[in-house]
View 1 (cartoon, helix red, strand yellow):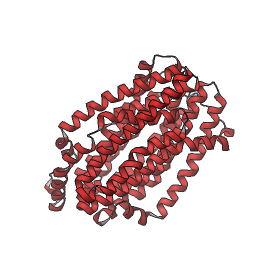
View 2: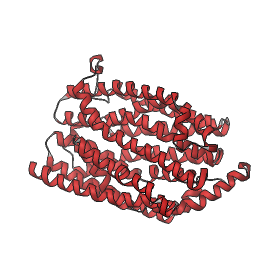
View 3: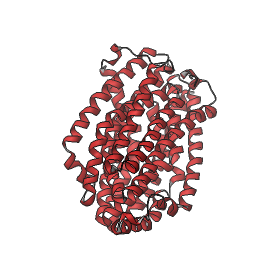
Amino acid sequence: MPGVSSEALGSKPIGKLLIQQAVPASIGILVMSLNILVDTIFVGNWIGPIAIAAINVVLPVSFFIAALGMAIGIGGSSIISRALGATQKDKALKTFGNQITLTLLVTCSMVGLGLLFVDSLIPAFGGKGGIFEPAKIYYTIVLYGVPFLALCMMGNTVIRAEGKPRFAMIAMIIPSVGNLVMDYLFIYVFDWGMEGAAWATTGGYLLCFGYIFWFFLSPNSELKINWHHFGLNRYLLKEIGGLGFVTLSRQAVTSVTYLLMNNILFELGGEAMVAVYAIIGRMLMFALFPVFGVTQGFLPIAGYNYGAHKYDRVKESIYTAIKYAALVATIVFVILMVFPGEIAGLFLSDNPDLGPEALATNAFVLEHTPSAMRWVFAATPIIALQLIGAAYFQAIGKAIPALILTLTRQGFFFIPLILILPGYFGELGVWISFTIADVLATVVTGYYLKREIHRELKMSL
């Protein structure tokens, strides 16, 4: 696979460049999302619906620690993209070295704390009743692999910052395929149950780390760091932290959302209602993969051209990314509105060997999931503006507006809504909160993005 120079980000036509960046990103996210989706289907069919709920309880904790790596990755990659655009190679190398050191220090510390407080964290995130034991088994094993996942997520964003989207795509595909193969072996063949699901997930993280480690040692990478690049630099740490805090805040709010949702839904309908949300959560990860792919492809293009002072190309990249993302989001919306029942049925089994209690839970989940899914995805066609707008400010290094817009949907709107509306509308109040929050956040993001384009980009042309 031939290498691609980072200079192409500042010279190729924006539409063609965005497709070249977004398609590999979308494929990578698709495979990763399919992995999560099929993994959930395997667990639901081979272990049972309570196992799905148990994994959903664990995800916020493990994802938050992994998000530390992503936050450091995106924060540093914004610096790297702009440094490469401004031909400041040494700054890019020093930034990458600092990213690695910081990721190891932070994530290993967090894993230690996560293992120390395991019995308190799981119930806090909704792991109550019959969910607790399988959740604890899964959590303990997966947490050991989370530092490798954090390094993978950090490294993946750096690969994109170099303008190497195909390598970043492969880095996402390898662990996903490996995880599914190990799922089959560990759960179905060896009958290891929750332990098998956990070891398959951890094994996928290790495969991903191995590939990314190889990439940066190979001739394909422009970033050849030495030992002195690992020494922490407080100015770079401040910039990495400021930009990375945007991503970290997003994941922190997501983890709080899971905590609240799991507890609210457990009170409304017990373990079965948590399983409904687990399926909805998987679809939120999976169905929007092309929109997230466009967003990932947009980041290095905007960052590089902003660093190179090519503001006309920055503006063009914004409009093109919104147009492409809105198109694919609308297609996703139509599919989900037409086939919600069929999608929900994929996660459930009518195998009598599961037992009457599990079958009753499956029936409840199948009855409640379709209407919930329609409400959750009702505003999907307009979320492109919300995602691209927030990503733009992060790409150009403006941490404060990026942080505000990132927190707008879940922090400012969604969390207050799910605390208020279920008291009046019950289960329906939970699901309509998604739609209302999406609409309000899109309006706010659109206003700030329009103002930024008018004040900064037009004036700079």
